Amino acid sequence: MRIAISGSSGMVGSALMRTLLESGHDSVPLRRSAQSDGSPSLDLAPIRTGCDAVVHLAGENIAAGRWTAARKRRIADSRIVLTRRLATDLAALATPPAALVCASAVGFYGDRGSAALDEQQPAGTGFLADVCEGWEAAADPARQAGIRVVHLRIGVVLSSTGGLLGRLRSLFRFGLGGRLGSGEQWMSWIHLTDLVRVVEFALERGDLVGALNAVSPNPVTNREFTRALGQWVHRPTLLHAPAFALRALLGEMADELMLASTRVVPARLSESGFRFALPELRAALDACGA
Ligand SMILES: NC(=O)c1ccc[n+]([C@@H]2O[C@H](COP(=O)([O-])OP(=O)(O)OC[C@H]3O[C@@H](n4cnc5c(N)ncnc54)[C@H](OP(=O)(O)O)[C@@H]3O)[C@@H](O)[C@H]2O)c1
Image (cartoon, rainbow, N blue to C red):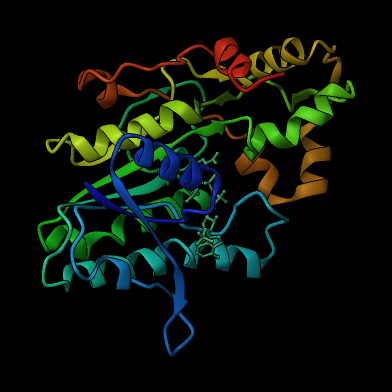
């Protein structure tokens, strides 16, 4: 297949580019450009002559800094506005791609306690839930043009190359790791290797349409995650960051990214026969090196 990828320089995009090339596919990056009015878009020149599928991963990093009004606008626009532009442009191509696989996130479900959340569950409330809902809806023009659209509701991606683990590893190594808030909040995660395999699965399986939870079948509480990280780096995790301190330090981000409880299950992947290579947290952490 000839596959175009936005966000190809990111943690997921660069791993995906590598894997697709190894699998014998022809993958091309979609670079960012701006419209004359300054709104974000992607340069589709590399695929005007035709491509089989687009994997759309681009978006402003949500954890790179405190959520000021300006950052929230960039987080939302780089997903909702950009995706609508892309979907509209793809729909207008003489030969549109057959499939559009878009990133979304488990943030779609919001803060939902310990309820197991499959793809049938409605969107939650809050900034991230609103962004994810708008991000998924923004692909409507592609859907209407008959393109098969898949939304990957991705959990926290574990990788040796960055992301949350990249940030936490040194903290935990210095013995500064600890649970956040009550530690009872659920966290849905997936190893990068499995996420790339999920993307390939979504590209290859022409019958998959709509939302797909891209998470391991074994979500954990923050307390369990903290303990596993401590064991991974062979350090104690006796510290505890109280919710009020996190809120004072990080504002709204603390509630949505650290204290929210989202226990997501990969119901559709399991029904479709997808086999996880790294379904257990300890093995997934070990695969990230020490
Ligand atoms: N990593 C996770 O834990 C996680 C969890 C849930 C969902 N996701 C979603 O999965 C996607 C890929 O994640 P990732 O970890 O690979 O993200 P990442 O490392 O932050 O990479 C995202 C890429 O998007 C592009 N980008 C950056 N700022 C942008 C902006 N303002 N507007 C448009 N594009 C921008 C860049 O690629 P180019 O320079 O090549 O354009 C960047 O490398 C993201 O949409 C993310 O929200 C990730």
